[in-house]
Length: 359
Length: 273
Ligand SMILES: Nc1ncnc2c1ncn2[C@@H]1O[C@H](COP(=O)(O)OP(=O)(O)O)[C@@H](O)[C@H]1O
Ligand SMILES: [Mg+2]
Image (cartoon, rainbow over all chains, first blue to last red; front, side, top):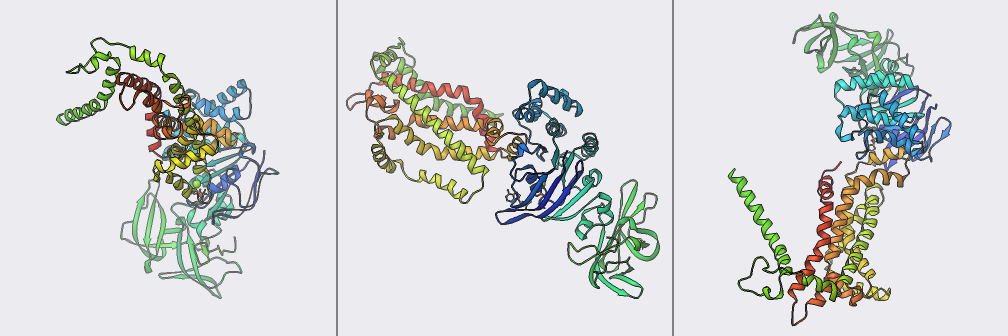
């Protein structure tokens, strides 16, 4: 068993900076997601860990071993590709057998391991088919099977579920979590889907433009997002972010924006009056009572709750949630309240740091 | 319905127009000398004979030329495929300065008429001591088959997802191993179509063979047959047609066996990714 360490890893492609000074320590047996929008360097990071791409500078370790110069086949890792990358001319069985063959295992042992992995993933019936004769979900499981047979130190998964339909994706999420629990191996999981990252990971590494924004457990990322970008990226419906001014009086910090004035919780010493951004999760906007007023702009009924968009004076919008029994009318004027203990304050800019004192 | 009929009619006329000379070639080669100039010409030989084939095989150099052509075309195909496959791999998989310009530059060979290239090439062969050898023809044919083969294989190679190779590397294969186990099987249709193209090109080539080689021992079929059957006074039509039939046989066999790959190959090359 082994963890993974990135120390000051940089990757440039012909002058384009894809990954910038990445420091990341993944513990043994941990399930870590690399999360971020498309093009932020997740795949590049994973490919460097796999040995398919070489870091421009910095060090990568698997366990205690420095692997910068170790070829992919000798890193004791397995990888599931977004495109699955099944060998089209080989049957499912041969696909799964290939990594074992390349490691020189005797035939009987190979067959036994393939049979075991196939059994675990319900692929036994499909062993003689070609990949082109399988559905997307089956291909995905074969790709997983090919990674499983070898029992590697570290599993690398690059958006393995992104080509599946929503229902299957939900099912496979649970399967993967179970698999991780059963194998206890380190898993590095790349995704742009915050829900996947939130539901599966021990910790999430959130990246933006090659830069690590925050590395923390899901609840931590949700409750104390390191900056405005993380706050906006995590959670659906996403956090309300309102630009305005921060000011200080004897009573403490206040946030003002057209149509909205709010006391905010204790801030760090580094907080300065001036431009700032207020972050409020929809569940902390309480509708139907309170001393603030707004017009209902939109009501989305999801079944077990309603997502309500409010038109606050001054052009600001606020999203709130109500239980399914409470359905506000469109265009209705409604009273609301913001849980001011639960709001976040971010510095100016797209990646303005969180200023709350509890961070 | 009407349009379908019209379409079929057009296709079949096209097939007939193309196929008739081939049919006439076979028929002529089987006619005895006497029937050759009969008027009106008979569609089918009245007394079919294989005497021209026997003459060709027994009394002429035909077999020597045939062997030369086989050797020449095979060797050229092997060299071209070997170099073009490696070249295509490099052009698609590795990033280096001037990669695109290099690929374009290679096509420049086709801007020069071969007549312009022949004399310098001949002089070079003489200097290298290769004049009048089959090997000089292998080199010459390689120069004009390679660029096209490189481009053809490059587009086939570009259609093979890089992830496949990455997966093989992660699974423990070396670069060579990944190429052999994963890339090569995917590339095979492309390699076969390219090989067939190169083989036909070399098999039918005339001009270079005429200039670079003038000893009977190393003439290929094209120039050999011309040289022996066509003189300023006389054309041995029956023998010429019999020779032509036998020259077509290897190509027909090759096509028959490889057709499956060929159609699949062109399909695969056309759709990227
Ligand atoms: N081989 C390459 N050459 C040049 N640029 C690349 C290469 N691979 C990735 N990039 C660039 O690096 C950035 C990060 O890519 P990637 O790691 O694939 O992002 P993602 O987070 O979507 O997986 C992208 O802007 C991409 O265009
Ligand atoms: Mg990616």
